[in-house]
Image 1: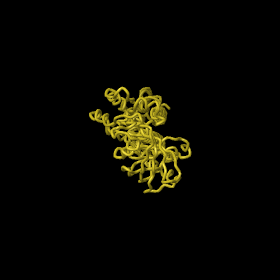
Image 2: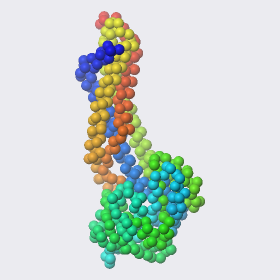
Image 3: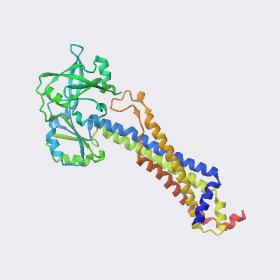
Image 4: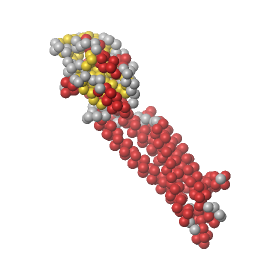
Length: 400
């Protein structure tokens, strides 16, 4: 066995050009696989996260009447979110519950110009991972507006703003709130129209009970377990409540899921083509060595041992190429995960809460995928040589 190992290593370094070109092909394929999958993940994971934070959750519960008029943001169709939370406290798959109230309101600073905006009310202690409010102070009596809107209206930190809107009973009411912070986003629709306030202030402004909200967003420990959790929640929901799941219907996230599946399919095709390229490179390299196989047979080596020599050789070359491919793939992905790809111009007219810069997401799974591509395909390529080893006639080789 030692002889076979030594001969395999000797063959690798005997023809430097062949070994280099074969390893290079594997290196490029593995690096491209790691970077390609990381780019797809970096493109879709933040989008799914941001939209679920802003709009859909993993599961969303509203009143049925509210669902039919959701675009109008009616505040008189409310749900008892405290009661629902108590009913769901035994569901281990539920990670986070966020009550929300959205409403149209007028906003102004003193006797200055009045503008219409959307009041987006939240419980700040449950919004610590919400991108737009991360690190922002939003206690009772405070309001957070976008930097762009503040510049347009002349608002500054510490200014007192007045919100005026209709209550759930139809009469006008107002509240004074102090600007505590500013959020930033490149999405013009959000920056120009949405202000954030504390849920308790919104309840007071709208004359709403402290246990009520218009929407309840539920987040699962695993994004893909939401269908199972939805089934459990439906059993405890009142008949006049409506439950929607991000994986169902015509939500943005469900459409993104289809888009992500298409991109994954494209990636799998690329993965397959990369595998074929590696196998083709290895097989061509091996098929050129017909004389070498004949000489080994003439020296008394059996077909099985000859095949084992080539198998070890291809596996070692595959390991070298894979190792280098992982290094290059991880390095390139890491660099671009910091620098990013700027799509600001392409996304400037798309009004959904996504970052215009895509940062590839490096994961252990993607590294394993690249490793499997390099090692498995290079090792499998030697199987194509098995039949050729058996049919080579050493007498004909010596005669040549």
